[in-house]
Length: 91
Ligand code: SF4
Ligand code: SF4
Image 1 (cartoon, rainbow, N blue to C red):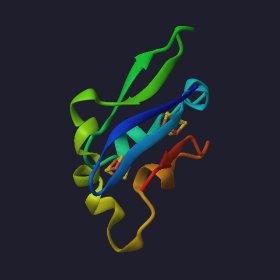
Image 2: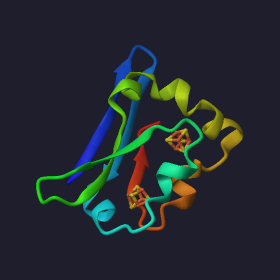
Image 3: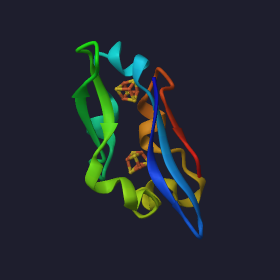
């Protein structure tokens, strides 16, 4: 399943997309430990596989939370460390 977490406002769309089928197969789940803002959490999906989600309490502040990671054209730390390519950004 492709899950989308985020929001939109007058300045744009701010969504993180996660391919949870890839997370279910991912042993290390390195996105959790590398995210400096601790935005990721886990939950069990309908098949009892552990998948990654974006914490509910930060979903409406993603632009601010990810600003340092995205500064100066750097590649986001979570993208750098997700070998499965399960993460995408809308901005
Ligand atoms: S590292 Fe990638 S595939 Fe693994 S849990 Fe995180 S987002 Fe999913
Ligand atoms: S861009 Fe940085 S702060 Fe945002 S989710 Fe990825 S690792 Fe975390």
